[in-house]
Length: 398
Image 1 (cartoon, helix red, strand yellow):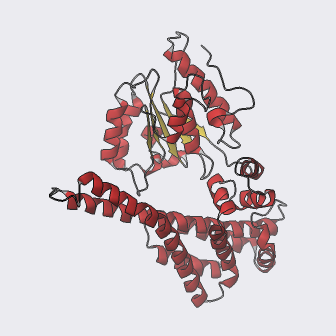
Image 2 (image 1 turned 90 degrees about the vertical axis):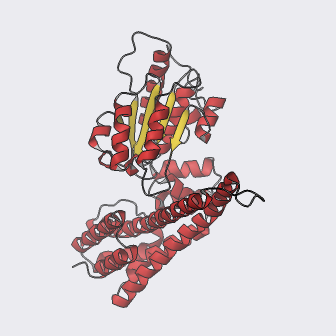
Image 3 (image 1 turned 90 degrees about the horizontal axis):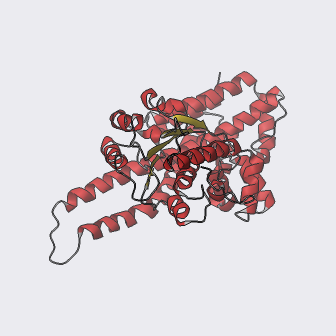
């Protein structure tokens, strides 16, 4: 059985997978195989019931998993227009469970609930699909709870896991999955998306695509938000200011403060609405109603908000460190005469000045120091201490 594909010229559910044509081809064939299996085609063997999508930030691994889930539920293989496609992509399809944590990890209790759901038959005629967008955040106990279900899924259940690299997922789980590795989209493809779909002026789209290094979400933010562009300019100005210990300490404080402000802006938008929703669900404030356990539930939510704010801060700080590393990447490109396009063309003068003043060896040490700082932050080292140490390393790489 061959599923009718979306008409030529319309990409259906695959439209957001920028620069991922080989991945779309593989997934489209897998959709045909899955539909043939549902139809009872005896020639279908070895169908993959567990997938692992990997790729660098911004590559679209979560979008790929969602698109595949929509195509699996669609009678036309991912037309992008039917109810199944639209509800899956919106996160409201009854047979597609989307898991994306805003906490630091995915706990075992949440995974056990997923495993329970995975054992159930789908409500519709097609598949029960479970998409775990942050499989790299599974705790050890959560991974153990997930293993059996991934290894021996129910007949009409498909697991879709997402992580930055295969090493971010425990070997026992990744060995049971079919792996797909997405690439970083080329800047030209990202710029085309911004101009054609978002109506961004061509010059702004070109800048955003180049500065984001292929990260579509980051490119959209840079194209649309002056505050995001301003924070990035401040980061790129740091290397020229690191002349002494005082300047290093001030630079570290500036990075932390900017990350805190960015995290607070997001959390302050989300937290009150979630608390109000929980209070309403519990009946808090209703005259004559005494809610047993309400205080404990509200405290648990407050703890979750605190953890989430910490993650928002760490993510914001990591974006700044990525921008900072791109500066030294450009310096190294000039020092080695690679001839590639600079990521930060707008600060070429500063890049050229450092390239002439420093050696390529020192630039490599600086890049390594940034990578070590990012790893330290992932290990929950105090952010201010980690960034202060980094600034001193950047000022004295030797």
